[in-house]
Length: 373
Image (cartoon, rainbow, N blue to C red; front, side, top):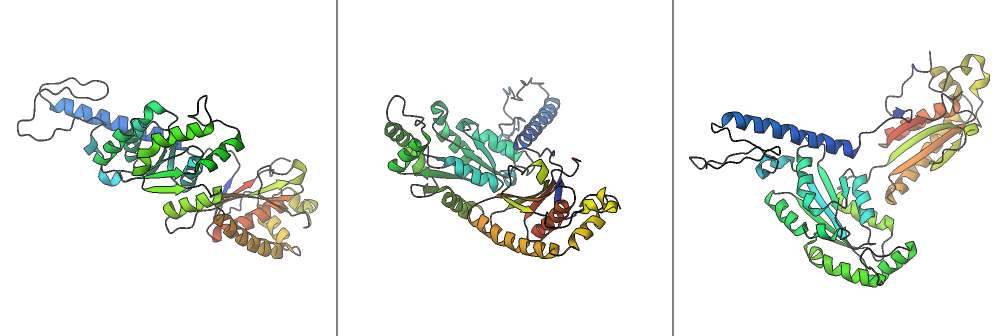
């Protein structure tokens, strides 16, 4: 049996060169859908109208005549608020608040929970973003937009955009991140950065100016979180409590086999060493194969201590992953090493990944050095 004849069905295996579909790809797909639907609708109306009214490239109709019976006429434009089915309208969260209060952390938390997050989007474009999400055929069901006062000219359009969303019956929530002046000053001083609104003045001057600009928005907020005494993990816990629902925050694991002679993986959170087991490299009939081969795997796990190690390390990971979830950690890389990363580490990585999958952990297996010899 060759090294490719055994596949692990429960864990996703990658060679490290996969190109995941990005949020930008989803945005382009949604935009193409809007363009296609607009063109088709515009063509249908052009053919149906007897007066052959010309339309501009955006699909706007220059209709001078009112319908005879007062019936509503669909112009086929993407700005038609009734064109989007209510069931398809995505859920929207607007994240705002004081600079330094944790907006970025809150946004990253929602992103980890599967939200489509856009940072510093001009408020005037929020309705357009919602419409693109509605046209995405369910691919973008939850959108989070970070709004702040860095672009003062655009911030003035927020009130108008919120009114527009209300007419479209969009379910939206405003999350406002608050913090005391003392806490904000300490945070800006610790990173040695100026407040975006302080100009030639002091940090407190910028904080005062920002509070005044955000005063009305804070009053409209559905959720105000004071982060004065919170660390990053505590803020994540509060966001999870509001938006994760009853499900526990998801943990994703990467199990990576590697060879010590090629160096430790720089992104490893946990490292274990399989060199306490006999090396199949010194068995002539196994040398050419890898740990994916059934005979190689059987040889590895028939060695004293191999199965016991797997059981005990899986128990340890069960304990660790519970702590990771409590602390808000979403990703963990477990590196399993042997001399060349071909036999022992590969076989153990496959079994370990299968254990994690059986416990509900989304797991990817990467064999970093398997083909290097």
